[in-house]
Length: 207
Image (cartoon, rainbow, N blue to C red):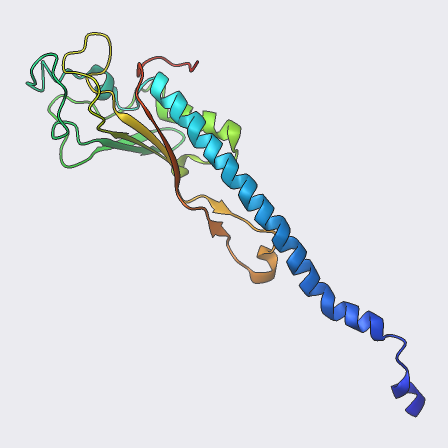
């Protein structure tokens, strides 16, 4: 028995067994940091592409493209639409439908907040973004049309307002490789967005 307790032949294996979990945690942690940075870069590119698509194709709410603030909104022809008359619009959606909300109260009479059911511009924006980052899903995308001071009431060639179009990705989760050690559901990415001023606001294809 005395010889058995003095035997140190397996000491290296025991020490390795103690250190291995810490080493693997450290290794996977380094990999996860790299993956997180990569995914953040993908998200950044996805919102840029989404914003570019949004400003050169159909606006999500039909009214933003077709409504005349000069005729229906009683704003002098050729003048800038004030922020009080266009506080902005927020749009979210699913794979089949989009819902838009007028910021700051009710939309003007006759202003249509529903999207074009044929072109489905919201779905096309998300589909284009998914080409860059497949993890993006419809509930993660929010489109905001914000007042910019551009455009004029009664514009015969395009929307009366040329809003700042902001594409945001919200609530997307990052799943680390170390999740299995801590039974975690993942880490939520910070909200990331990108904005561009509206261009023509019509059409179904991006340049």
